[in-house]
Length: 119
Image 1 (cartoon, helix red, strand yellow):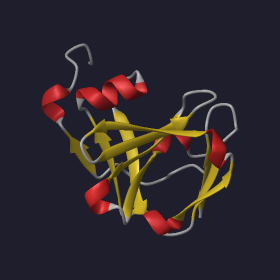
Image 2 (cartoon, rainbow, N blue to C red; image 1 turned 180 degrees about the horizontal axis):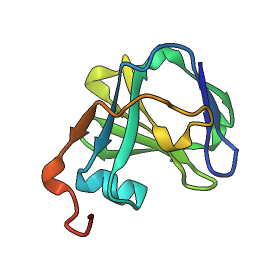
Image 3 (tube, rainbow, N blue to C red; image 1 turned 135 degrees about the vertical axis):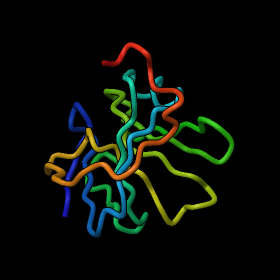
């Protein structure tokens, strides 16, 4: 089991199940959403993610057709990314994990958008 929370602690969650894969997404939408060079995610079954506190603080944003991103409406911490056509899966931001993730990132997505200012 993994647990996690947003920056301010208003939203808390647990993952009861396996992490199927992890990814770093370099797309420009993830860059803007995270305010960083990429967005790191753990892909899990939607049924494995349980919001244990602060569900009312979660704000959702349709960033493109069929894609919904969720973040804490209090502190702005990015929480999840999900495609409507694959609603049985959800990507949870690795940076919000309170339980350290010890695995390796398995996929890099949209590397053509990787910023040139990285070493």
